[in-house]
Image 1 (cartoon, rainbow, N blue to C red):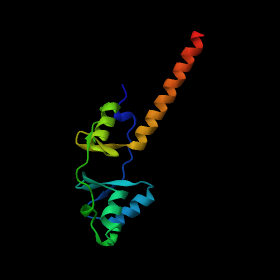
Image 2 (cartoon, rainbow, N blue to C red):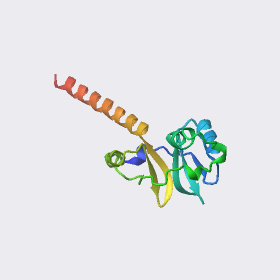
Image 3 (cartoon, helix red, strand yellow):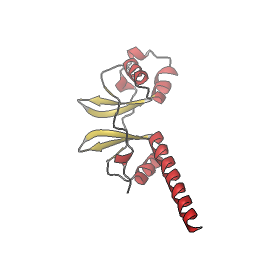
Image 4 (cartoon, rainbow, N blue to C red):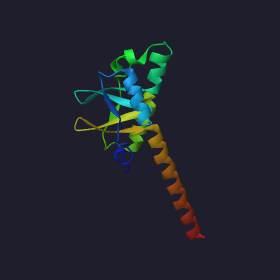
Length: 141
């Protein structure tokens, strides 16, 4: 049984809620990522993505250095446990039309599951399954 623990990214980019949108944008660029988790007292309270910047700052022609990140973050994020089966994580992402799931263990953020991580896992699984079928077919010939 494959679980979220096997595919989650453990290096999650976080930033404190009292930082600005500009501070967070710099962090995203420095870490070559498109999202960050917003923390208050070391606990996740939201997520901010490139899409949030486009919809809430750029399109409204606002100054990112004047906007607290907490004003543009999304507070309603979905979570799973490391022991969640990958198939269940995929279903949760599809049901909620989301690209990321935060992974919590004992109320602590321990990782994130992304669409890219899932796609990589599924590609590898397909390649392995295909190779096994070929080997089995060759052995039966």
